[in-house]
Length: 348
Length: 79
Image (cartoon, rainbow over all chains, first blue to last red; front, side):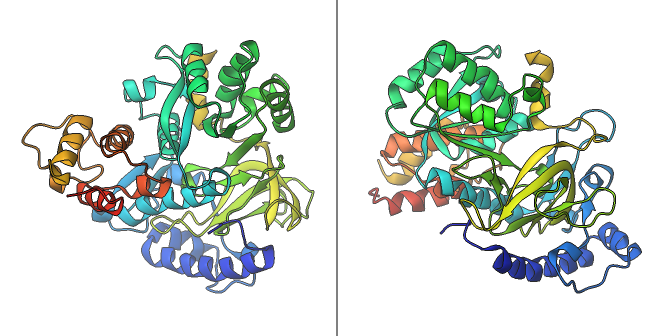
């Protein structure tokens, strides 16, 4: 069953009921969350999704926010916080830990199908060899491994491109659909460049990538250019960027087949807000991205104000129903942060 | 060899368990060796041994030895 099926009006009606219930659920179980909402004078009923109270994502760095008793904590996720504000801590109980990969799977199924495809990981084999799975990037890569099989890594243990491994993978699997996963700038630097140089044929690939454009903006590669050059130089056209964050683990906003727009799965939505007035922006006007998802039950992350800028391009007028949007970058004042940043030192 | 015995030896080898480990009662993340990296190796080893191919959802749901036994029975693997 597709999780990209709900038109906007239907989505908002369903989400309003579920997120209102979740707000009450978290108020009853997470005292700091309830204190914040009480101080804001938050009511118990809301007229629309935009009326729901949001938390800034940053609060997960400065506060322990969880809606489960200590003895039910099964897993604590931490973001790759750099300097300053520290790392977010996200608490999952057994149910939440089991649910998030299922919903991620349901989301990606839309573009991958149910079968696990041979998978080229655009990352270092050191992640598995040295079990360097403690970095957020390593954990992100390994979390995706479930969606593929016969995994091959595009970088060797010294983080150098392993051209022989990539060629071997393509010889074996390149004639059938295969999955490519990696962080955006790694995919560009270590797959696109290598594929172009060695004239590799990636036309049967399905690329799923994430991690932000900051490093690529410097070399003037945006999403459209990324797609154009991959198609032209490697034959790869099935490309799906996604946007998600650890503070809403399991929820990803996925680029549709036509490209250049991200879509919300049925259990999620976005609202773009004016950074001065906090009013909802009309279609086409950039602002701060707020993300809503019914997944977070073990911590109050169901309605979050991100530190990213974005713009809604249209509603119910694209590849899939609902809003379609783009991420434009970080808020100017936001601390530099991101999973792929852990590679910055080694890569430069 | 019975399904249980074959699966026990796949688990023992893929997760590098001690010979006397309580494999039948093992659950995902009970031990360090069965983390996400171990899981990849384990899934691949089970698929090889029993000549089956799990779907994505099954890989996610394969969270204990007992679940693995049930899944393999579902594939029609003989006892």
